[in-house]
Image (cartoon, rainbow, N blue to C red):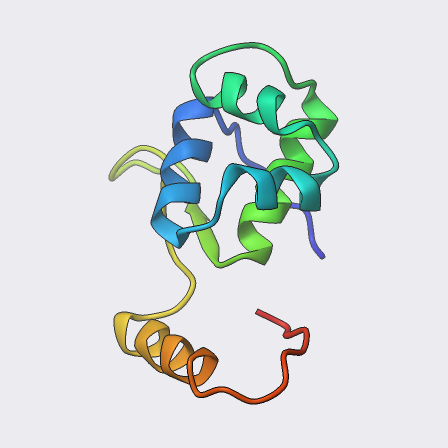
Length: 105
């Protein structure tokens, strides 16, 4: 997975996580950090080092967040990787039943 170059603060991490509807535990586990450290970071704490922050950002991207870098038109932001229609289609596919398996989302 390609690293993204972005100064991500806790509020942006929290916004991304809520937008993609993924628990702090899931993101923390994927990023290899403690859940309580991620939650503290999201609240403005300095519990994560630069490498851990990068792994959290990469984890959020893995689960469907797209970070928007600052430019002359505006500041940093986050949006979903998939459109609203795409998200609905994925949610429908996941609720169709059948054997549970890993996916590439």
